[in-house]
Length: 275
Image 1 (cartoon, helix red, strand yellow):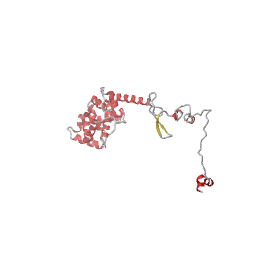
Image 2 (image 1 turned 90 degrees about the horizontal axis):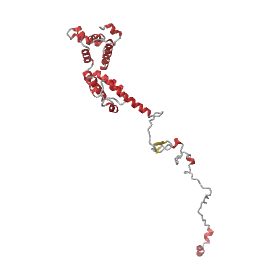
Image 3 (image 1 turned 180 degrees about the horizontal axis):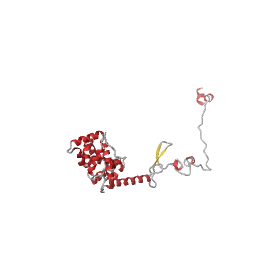
Image 4 (image 1 turned 60 degrees about the horizontal axis):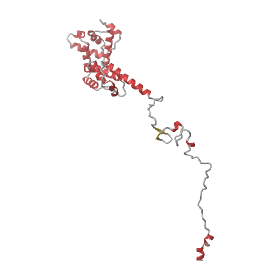
């Protein structure tokens, strides 16, 4: 038999009121954990839980006992499942219950959420919806079909006994995926992509503000003109062709400029004929 003194040694939280239905659910979960530690039989759970009601919650429970046959003695025959149902009807409005049911029916793993985080959110809704969630195997199937597609594809044909087994399998896949990605990154965190022999890539030309196809000559120290790594662009033979030793540079030709003076013009034959 569990005595009130043993119950109080574990310092269970008191319950006065709940601003949200989640707060009420948290208290029920907390009290059930205390019961589990004590190994409390079902016929004592309602009496012990009622002992921790205070303020508005105690007033509500006292008023409820007055409506039941036997009055205060009703607490000794009220099962824990019945107490939970009465408690939820008081602190879970119908609209809230329906909202949780809809959310549970359409739950899925978010993009930035790992399978462990998804499981926590899933199991919280399971507590809210109660019997609607079904047994452990049905919950496992519902959880599995809500996983990300690339995870689901790897376990879709597997059957699991409960949600924790599905989560463990999904988390292993995520860890392998993360490990594979980390091995394909350089020390700067940039992903390394394998390229076939002779395959070219686009590299940036910071000096010209453009991209070109081919190797980065600035990185290799090669010539920007011909691509050779044996010399720089200033020594490139294609840019400055080699001149043979016996080559004679031709003398540039210039046009003649004829200047005619006034005297020369007077001595021209046509001018003498006119004179």
